[in-house]
Image 1 (cartoon, helix red, strand yellow):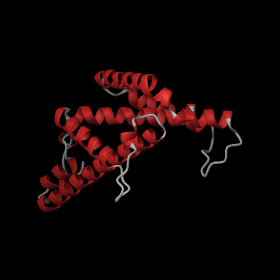
Image 2 (cartoon, helix red, strand yellow):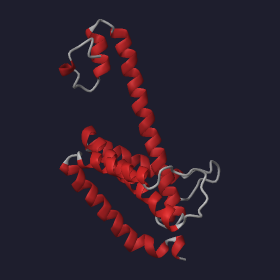
Image 3 (spheres, helix red, strand yellow):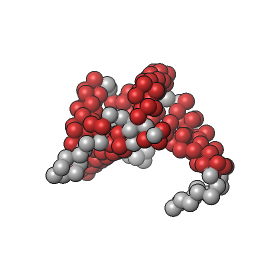
Image 4 (cartoon, helix red, strand yellow):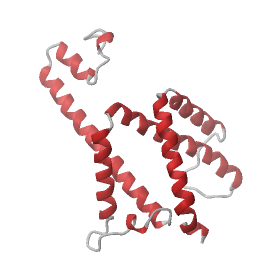
Length: 188
């Protein structure tokens, strides 16, 4: 792309399409843009699907109300949970700008990856006999590097993202101690 257009002009939302348009390849730029829209749509649907599955599993384990794990008799899918997740996602998309939303998704993903990296070390130390289908190599070095890189990327996110993340973690902690802890299947 930098061979087609100066790199200083590539700081836009669709740099590949811009570079192709600058050399007269408008039809290819259009195809790339359409592909980008389909790619983003696929990612959004996958994330919503993952959230439905996550809240379904948490509900089944007693950490969320049972309505999240109720499935339709005919389709065997959590339809109420799917609709609720879809409406919440649409509401968030309607009121939060895309950049802020991307920062929040990045923060959540980096936090999850950091916790997974730490959990690998803890599980390996506390339960060395645990049989798993995959074992992370070079423990604890690789998980420590992974956690440090995730934290480095998280630190680079805007201050407001950290505040929003702290509020969300606080809300989750309140839900856990007020509702989930008493009803957790693991506590029974």
